[in-house]
Amino acid sequence: MNGKQAMSLLGLAFKAGKIVSGEEPVLKEIRAGQAKLVLLSKDASSNTSKKMLDKCRFYHVPVRWIETREMLGKAIGKEARVAVAVSDRGFAEKLAELLDES
Image (cartoon, rainbow, N blue to C red; front, side, top):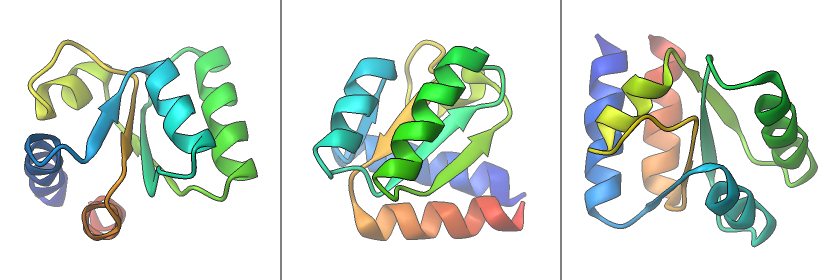
């Protein structure tokens, strides 16, 4: 159930303008120190996953996994997305908490 709550919260964060989606914009957000949490889909390519995980590790950004790219995209009302960065600490902490519970 918490996964569903997390996706609803992700939608709210998107509407509030606290979400960046897509591989390059997310990497840019991480490098700029703006990303507080990165959500990656489990079906992302191994190359994309490695690149994202390496960047997140280097910049100390927490990462959580989402089942599919479709689920991630749907949560923010977009096409399938493999990566999403949350730039608001409050949203990021609550999302991480909900995803850890699910």
